[in-house]
Length: 150
Image 1: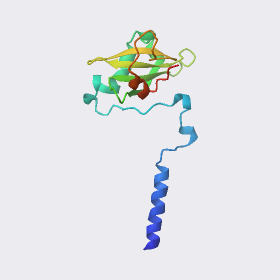
Image 2: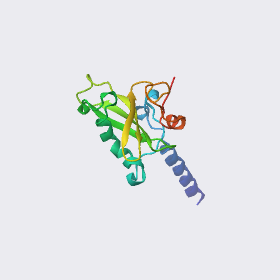
Image 3: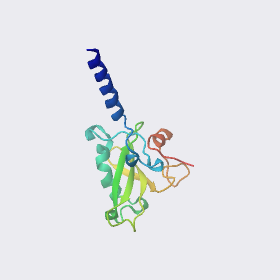
Image 4: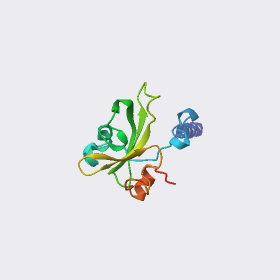
């Protein structure tokens, strides 16, 4: 009986190590691409403006930084909500297949005004930072969404 208990303990330790989220280096993001832990849309009716599912459409029609000019050039990815204020979201744009040479990509912020999402800022650096052309989100939101400002 004692041996069976030892086998069970070893099995649990191994299972815990396998599930610890370490992953292989190939599956980890580069440090500069690391994303903060944020709330993902699970119940759209309970989240502002329908949650993250409605953000890609809002990005594609936004005039901010010309996102509406040729929305077929990019994909909207990695959409996440701030934990401290779910009316703020961050998103990435990545080149669509075949557009790698013509579309750089970047990231942006969207804010829910109560009925719909609107892109507030977009670019590749200092997005959402104080001193820019638009008012930044609150400091807690910037921290939640991984906004690094100089």
